Image (cartoon, rainbow over all chains, first blue to last red; front, side, top):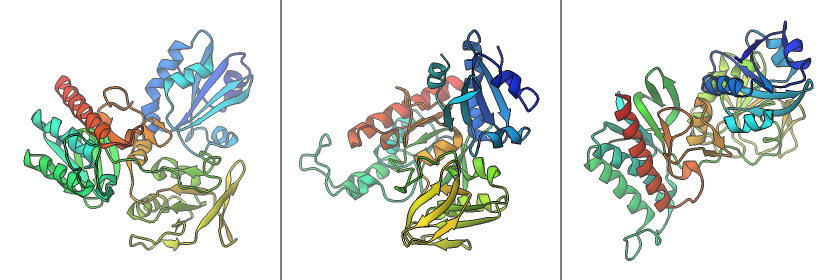
Length: 103
Length: 285
């Protein structure tokens, strides 16, 4: 499955109201480290497709979501379970760590 | 455009340069500041020196050795390393140099100052990258903690976005010329729970701030790495067995990668980084 583009319109549905764990990547197009993180995020989305979801929030397009989760630095990666944040990583994070937290 | 730019001229950087130059690559080494090696009075545990050698001599010999085989060596303070379409741009105070490959061999620089609250508030107002995170502080008050040209450069990146930016030296003398407000008092704590709220000084005074940007001393390997998107392990750059980082074409070696802080380890890693960089360039053609 590919990375879900998240916005105010679908955030509740895709992240809060699902029984799967969800990895959400907060990023912006002008952020160098975010671009570095993007290929890993795509790969994770493919590899966890059977049991978890992966989405991304562009902080320029959806500042309200970034504000709600207190995002002050990008990339920030949040992992949700039952609508709650269970892991938070600020900065580029290795794929293995994220994969193990999505299991 | 160089084939390889190496930042740092200690044993790791020089060793990488020697191997790359001997493979006919066009190599530039940029360095500044004091090397840990230069400060070591005597090195007694490195192969081949019967009576030991002073750190300063070993360091200077290394630079001369690299120059003798055709490595270009420049003494300039590097402020930033950026990715370009076909490699890297290494920005110093006065110049920009471009290369296909970059090797970070800047030694082990501490990323975080010992100030209460820093780790807890990372990502909640404490940042290590003005250009990445300045956006979140539009019309807010921020401070840069540092005392050199690097701190001034970070403050400049912020000044057009934020309402007010001030440089805090945390008890050190300001070592760069600047028109920004500078406060040299020692900091005791960064205050805040979910977000940074204030800075408390040792004299008991507090100032309200929304963001704290860390830019200690000269920019080091971990500072560059964070801005490019290299994965770090605490303050060290994470590399594989080929000294490659997670960023294509970017390598690191020596004390920058953590572990044993010894000349022998730096020389070995430099050799591996140099040879890996050569292999990468040859395969890319």
